[in-house]
Length: 269
Image (cartoon, rainbow, N blue to C red; front, side, top):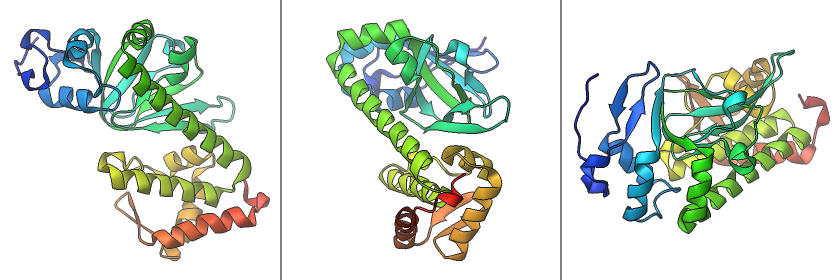
């Protein structure tokens, strides 16, 4: 095993307490200073003092997966809570009989996953799958519970993050129950546009296939193909090389509002 020495003292962690991560094939490496910097500057950890970080850092496992790997299956949801440093992960529910899939959450850097099991400690029937090469830190759920009891700043940051996730889940349920597929797609594009303007790392739709987009709005690929074609022909978006760009924000807003006003139930899929 080859070990590479690095310094992370600029981030307040002694050199003797460096983190490690396991690559998908099991090789062991030290966490780089850049990766550690991302961790401590993320919303869950940035409010913690250096003394607290000294206690938490050595207890975090940092793992790396390649694209399209299952990170967490239902039987392992009650074990660990993860925070992403790099890459995207989708949290999905699947119907094994029909093959239909619904993506509950599309997550990127600084996001945590396994929220439900963190709250109740029970198995959750979801699968976490990487969409890019991913690096994430994790610890046992029991350890996170200890930290949340001990550190008020971490507890407050986690509460705020859980609030955001629950609101997102509520919006998904509302979209699926009340809005047609064009409205759902428009909402998805708008949310991504708003988030990526604040933080370019939050452009979570970039490079996604039409099938993955379909999973995000509860429909199928052929429907997404048709809807994107309509938006392109109207000059609302442009799709090139697997990337989607908003050309006319006002038209996109108008299209979303128009679909809601018309409330055309026959198009619900």
